[in-house]
Image 1: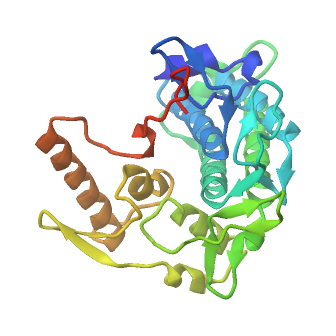
Image 2 (image 1 turned 135 degrees about the horizontal axis):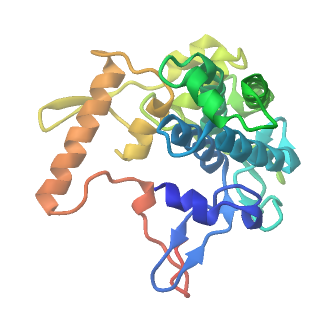
Length: 295
């Protein structure tokens, strides 16, 4: 809900969205953020403008404030670390580079760039929206220049991410991530096409950081459930199956498209069978500390 951003994103959080807000048993704001959170915040901001919740001018201000914070945050070979403390933007230990989180952010930054560049040309809201957003001190051409500048900053951040060190050339697969303190890659690898890491693979191949052969080393084992065929994922969660599809084009009648539809059908059926909400994902894993704070 857009109220989340209005209420919890501000100077106190350095204009970045906190990981979550917990109401029960007492209100708690999780003052941390991740590359995936950041990418989704940026897309949510431009989506709010598309939907008419905020003006182009308000959108550019929110994005500008977020990018100012991003430029202050420590990175490694262009990658943002897995978690940051929103009190002071320091990296939370252990300092870790997550392949999937970096892929999400890179893909979302590229999508953000395209969305910003399309605003002036949008036949339904372009020129009229820019005129409406312009104030006495800024005309439409100034707003267009701001949009282009933000688009370039988003693209530069994505291109600065070097995915090569996360890649195992012998296996032709990506490691789960990189431990900076130990200077080592995790010994586990993303080896399935139907996983949340597919976007990282797609971006890295497109950037020419890794060879095209990597794409064909991602497993395509098929399974059948309730009469439907789908690619095997790690745990069958919506996060794995659908997260890359937020910004990657889905082509009808392909194996990936059929897999996404089959996964959703099975999740709906699973929820109906047990009388519970459908859409099982990692976000439903309810681990709390001794103060009952969600972890």
